[in-house]
Image 1: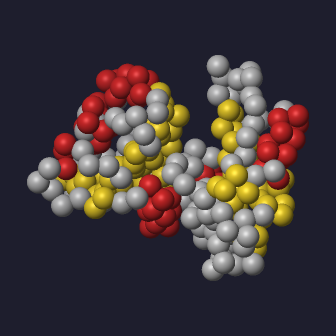
Image 2: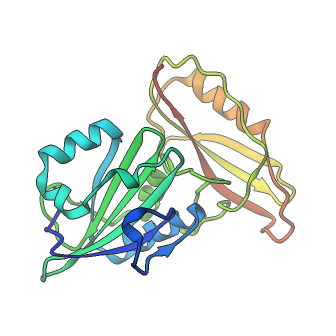
Image 3: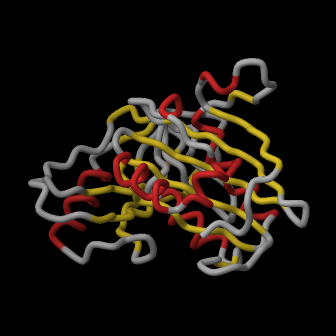
Length: 239
């Protein structure tokens, strides 16, 4: 599924120190910067490849079957952390480059590849807002929430003073995306489920998410705009 072999590979950045970085000059970045880095690749390249939604065991099985991908990313056990982590590589086959971004969280692994090669499985990087919402549906690691406002992250650095709380019986899997507006003092002045990014159709669950967000509160930030807009993803998994 990757557009080319990584004949020349460069380890670009990581959120964690790992054994493969010893002796190399790799940029260590905070989790809160990963969203911006990924969006930079989305702007720069013409296509991306979606290899998301793996379990760690499933990802290892996938690499055993797809030697091309395995050779390109050179995954190993030192890149598996219990806490959220992200890594990026740049490969080049002499005709063009591609970027491989690996996002890990607990037992889940998501992999994105950005390239100017529109091969089989390539997705055109044409709808930034749609990609932004899709990415935020599974990349909400660290403090705050990854969201956008007029194409820019808007409440990423706002942490929770009172986080939303939802009791779920684990009977369905999917995402409920809630659009929010936040005041400087942290009050949530608007909360409504967004059809874009939401994969579950259970209206009772939608109501639960909206109520949970309305009763939550962000931290106060006097230097913030009078009102900020963004999206909060709720991911549900089967028990």
